[in-house]
Structures are given as C-alpha cells and as structure tokens.
Length: 227
Image (cartoon, rainbow, N blue to C red):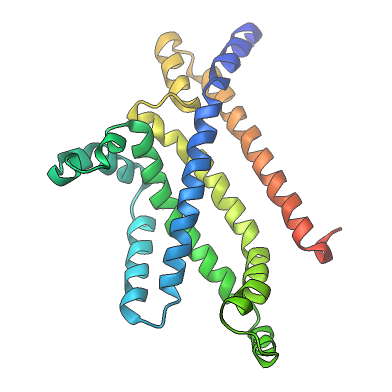
C-alpha cells in the first residue's frame, strides 16, 4: 500500500468536494421547487394537469440521467431559439447544464415522494380538522404539510444521497468534481484502483454526513420514534 500516494490523491480529490456539494445542493433545491409544482399538478382535480405530471415523471424516471445530461449539454446548443434566448449564457456553461439535468431528474423522483407523503396523511385526521373548521391553507399548514414532512423526510434524504452520487456523471461534460479529478489522475498515473478507492471513500463520507443529518432531523421532528 503506497500511503504517500494515497494521501496525495486524497488531497487532490478533496479539492473537488466543493464543486460536488455545490452541484448537489443547487440541484436539490431547484429540484424540490419543481417537485412541489409537479406534485401539485399530480393532485389536481383537472385531468390534463394530472396527465402532464404523469408524463413528466415517466419521462425523467424512464430515461437514464446520463442521456439527459448529454441532451442538455450537447442537444440544446443545436436549437436556434435557445441560442438566441436569455438562457443561452447559462446553457453554454457545463456547470449550469449539469444543474439543469440533475434538477429535472431529481424533481421527477421528488414529486413522487411528496405525492406519496401527502397521500399517507390519515384521512380521518383531515376529516377531523375539517370538522373543526379548518380548510384550505390553514388545513395544509397545520395538518397535512407537517405530517407529510415526517412521512417523506427519510425518502427525500435517500434522494439527496442518490443525487450526490449522481453528480459524478457531471464529470463526462468536463466538470472537475471529485470524479472528474479522479479520471484526470488516472489518465496521468494509470493507478485506477487506488485513485477510485479514495474517491469512493470521499463519497462514502459525504453520504454518511447526509444520512446522519437526515436521521437527526427525523428524530427531532418525530419525538415518539426516539429510542
């Protein structure tokens, strides 16, 4: 085991952690906003809105994320009206293409998590709240949303972890995140086993931090489940 090489590799790969975290955090926040909108459409009484939400979810869940990244990064540049639009200064940058693809992908999964969490709220509690005069925003704010947060937090935490690992695909469009730096080191040293082992340990540490944070938040929101 070449410890000096491993330490030098870890030092190099750690410089890509800020970009990895920035990609994950930006995409997760943007994806959550989109997911809320898609979940609202899925729960609409207007049938075409439900069909649109179902089509969106099927499209992004049914195609590989790598293909989606390629379409955004390579394909959007072939569309004339996009090149002439206000969005082109962003879409011509690899970072924002990766954020867009990751956000669209995670929003499809997030919408299903949100929809399922809302559906899990017991109907009898909603009926009891309505019997007490609650309705509309007040009902959602006091009864539905707090419980939906408890039901969906663990699943959304898993989605955050999956998204963090999915950021490694951004390396294929020249972004020097942890995986991108690992590929560059391998091309220089041809020591793929040690380099990717270190990269894997870095991702493992990041996912452990996220999982621990979600677990602590879940315990705080659900005191009855504390052990």
